[in-house]
Amino acid sequence: MPYSEEFGDFYYSRADGRAECRHVFLGGNGLPGRFAGRSHFIIGELGFGTGLNFLETWSAWETTVVEGASLDFHSFELHPLERRDMVRALSAWPDLAQKSSRLAAAWPEDPAAGISIDFEGTGGSVRLHVHVGLALDMLEKTRFEADAWYLDGFSPARNPEMWSAELMRLVAGRTAEGGTFATYSAAGWVRRNLQAAGFSVEKRPGHVGKRDMSAGVLGRPDINSD
Image 1 (cartoon, one colour):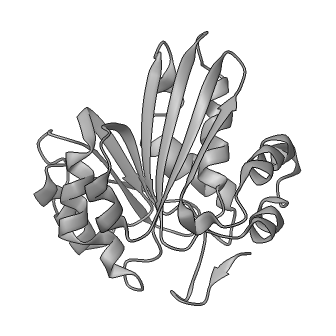
Image 2 (cartoon, one colour):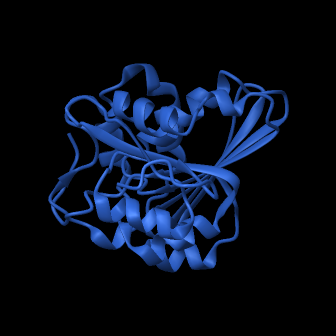
Image 3 (tube, one colour):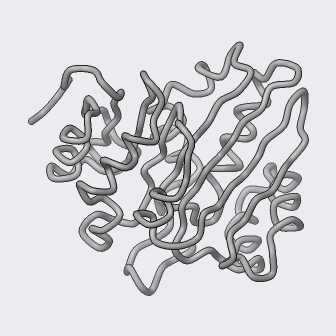
């Protein structure tokens, strides 16, 4: 189980990180259903971690992809893992071995310089962009409009900068009309920052052992503002 000494937190749920990804990030954003019929889809993520969310998304994309379609996955990470640590973490899921091996093979020796990798898959292409540095700084430099966001930084209590009002405004500014977000966090101040940025915020049942998570859509009236 990968653990960050700096933030004193695990990279994903100790119960089942993969099930958490499917429940929170894919399910919370209506994926893979929203992929159907799309020729291009863009995902933004705060916190690349081990790459598990990316691999799960890639797998889900291939279940619905149309010929020639493309997926762009933009992730923002302050401390990218070295290849050996990524491989060790992802080895927990042998059925992802083919994709995790491709990711590891393309992962640079010095990931701190930023990462851009193209993967050809079944029927379409997947492009991974890992922007290395402070999320606030890197988001200001990028230009894209995400259809869905995975807000997956370390715990808001341990890494509050990753959930700040300023950063949530930038996330909203990099979101397409009708774009969505999902996060495991249901902290009140995080939800208020997202609301202030222009997102609706809805509480939903959390992953195993967690009562609530949050999800929402840009530009709709608040669903749950408690």
